[in-house]
Picture 1 (tube, rainbow, N blue to C red):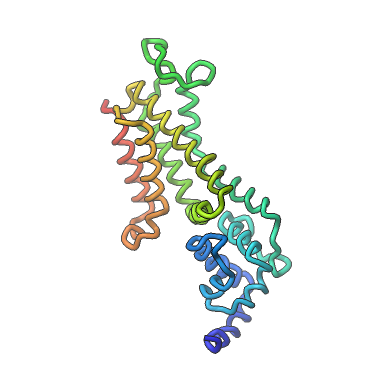
Picture 2: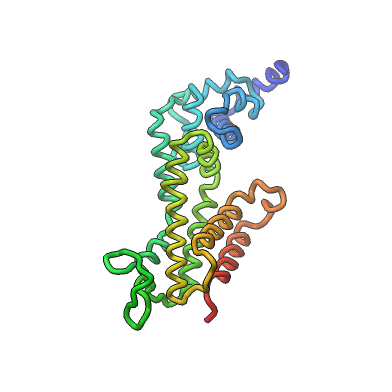
Amino acid sequence: MNESVSNRLPAVVRSKPADRLEQLAQAALGVFTQKGYRQARMSDVARAMGVSQGLLYTYVESKEALFHHVIERIVGADEAVPAELPVRAPPAEETAALVESTLRRGLAVPALDAALERTAGPGGRPNGTTAGPGGRPNGTAPVDDPRFELEAIIRQHYQGLARWRHLLAVVERLALDIPEVRERFYAQGRRPFVARLAAYIERGIAGGAFRPVPDPAVAARLVVETVAWFAYHRHDDLDSATIDDSVAEQTVVDLLTRALVADA
């Protein structure tokens, strides 16, 4: 094993720093996604790269620095070779803030925000029970094309997940180990989004735009999980990974929209 690694070292030394940093980021991404941050070891990354562990420390000073480097590469915040090697570890709060701000912007669904604002009752509060103008319940203001609006919501959510699937894979794995990450990602991020989508579906049903379903919250979960699987989880499936990305997106949008929008 030692001889095999030694045989590779000359090629490693001749590699450009930019190439080696990219290879390092890719190997570390796989390790962090599979094992999580706490259980990942620098030796695991070295093994994935096929190099000696000591070589890694010529590029990053620690596992903390490596993790931040991986996140920066995912979000495109640091494409250039650092002026000084090895890469230093920033405060942990900086890494957390980078992840949170990226997901907050990247997973935003402005079409859902606009739809909820449109369907809000007096004072901005949703209300699907009090009769409004023309006998239509407050909180269910009509939209010219409910199919178009729902398509926009699903498509924006799909495209956000597809773009940031590598970052999401890391965060979801971290959430299993770190309570703070779990709280931010699920309790403060994903669950409120599902609740907002459920409220939108419920108001659409009340307004006659959507067909009745047994439970709007479960319907919202179905939408979210279907989008999540096709947008990025399918890439881990040998068969489904071969589906063309644009075909997958359009199929999901088409079928989910047809499932919810009421017949004209």
